[in-house]
Length: 338
Ligand code: G3I
Image (cartoon, rainbow, N blue to C red; front, top):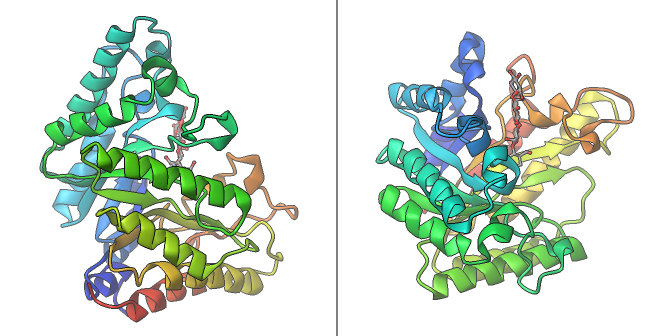
């Protein structure tokens, strides 16, 4: 059967995955990547803290290698992220003068987006700016970027990004919106309000990136979700799934049963999401369980009680298609052409 991207293209969408440069040294993985994907995104090497840990000495070589790989294999390339509060360099956090900090932030954004001008299909200009627990009425996260510049930093980033690469689709990317809980509902409301305000001010936001880090056993309301997607797209922007994977911590250890439950979570969410006419396509946060942040277990919440390795992605660690792959393929095939 065709790879996921070829299935997606037939419906006017794309499929791809996040990768790290070191994955390009794994020939078997690269073969699977090229078979399944039509777009790639850097898993972490485009982040400011990774590019410029030492002020004034940016290293874009890993990102250059990924962009060159994409170009050499006829793949689209997307950037992640322009700015993310979690991954700004320590030297930037230490800058006390607002004008100096702003100049440094914009210089980085201009250099990064300008370097891949015309090559990037899209950029997550800003990642994860909403955090209701911080208690602001606008729901914005009280982190380094807001602390230094106030809420206007978001407008500034998108205007700067547009000037740096007029051809790239500019996305705002966030998580924690997919399920039917009060926490997710609060985040959906805050993100919708953020996007509405940006667009009302003429800020150039072209799309909203749905991270879609899903978990087996979570409450989902397809109608509620579809209505929210309508509200976001109704602002006149596109939608894309940018980081989908399914954490299986609450699923039993048995692999067949676990794979079935993970596939069912992909199927349920994608059936409610891909049909939306504003949906441009999807990327998973990794292609194979061989390389997944969930399997690496950097987050305590990703450790299974039985200690078994999670199985979150469409291919297993031996690069074999899983029921999750079939669920994604079936959802793409079932989606209307756009
Ligand atoms: O591989 C290097 C290693 O050689 C080096 O010695 C070490 C030194 O720090 O770094 C290692 O790279 C780490 C990399 O993950 C690969 O494991 C980076 O430090 C670490 O920062 C990086 O974390 C990434 C994280 O974002 C922060 O950028 C994760 O891979 C990546 O999966 C995660 O992705 C985020 C999205 O950007 C936003 N949405 C949530 C998603 C999951 O947290």
